[in-house]
Length: 144
Image (cartoon, rainbow, N blue to C red; front, side, top):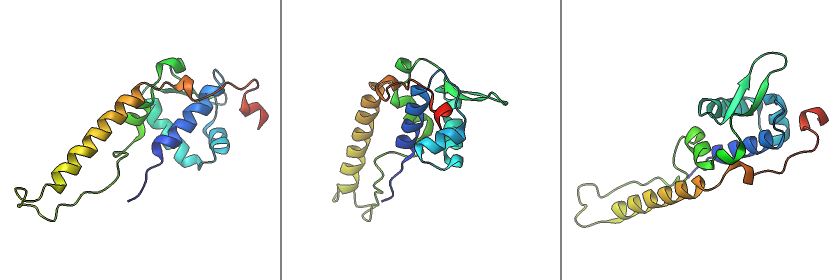
């Protein structure tokens, strides 16, 4: 079972951008502070821009900043923007396909994972970006 880090990494990116708001941050700066390869940061930032979580500005004075106040951005939005598969990453095979009348393992676990996913999405919807950070006094792009 491989574990995705997309949601966690995107949450760290969001937290860092929010903590430096309204300062625009370059993805290279975000990558340095979040300790993630710049290409990965650019990909996740791009997805969060498309989801109206972050706003991107081009040019010499460009960078990214929050698209909305952090109290209006939920982790469910981040999850929906960046997560390519369920966080419940256990692959379920059904070696008894065609014998569902006798073996309910596949059915039980499929239903359980769907319920877990639904409950997790509800919980993520209750967590807003402002709960992820404490603002910096001096924007970190100026420090680093």
